[in-house]
Length: 231
Image (cartoon, rainbow, N blue to C red):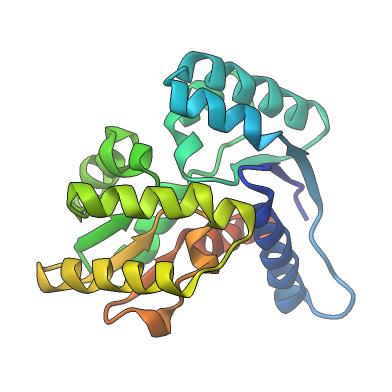
């Protein structure tokens, strides 16, 4: 079994889900008392969040690179960044380590292709929804048609992530807002919706959506398990 290197803490609320899902995935595949071989480096999210909202992506990239190098030095066989937004610097991180970085957008795109869908909605932080590092990868590498909410709704999605979900707060009113936004995206042609922030799966489940939900935390965790158990 290969060792999964996990760069977490963004937020730790979703990193807990990663750890649980990866271990459950290994146990399901191997049975008995088996669990995953993992190595986690967890950052202080307050420091990262400040850099994000200051637009200081260069400093954020250096933080990710330092963490990734520590994970590699610890003996990990692969790296997963346990957050969607910080895949903004995935290429820069991959360029300085010698182990494969398992990209969350790739894992998600493979799941969407397997479901034979092409028109897909994307929810996440405003950085993930509005910048090209994520949606652009889905369009250019996988030929997906990616749709995002209107401006005011993007702000609602973003604010719920940072002000509630990253703090472990699950609010029914916020769930209703997300459900409305998903319904409107579906009416406008979205065949499925990417929960493109690793905390959104804490709030939205398949029963809350009229279209297929792609929970990036669960998909990414399963992708890492596949790698760890591959020959």
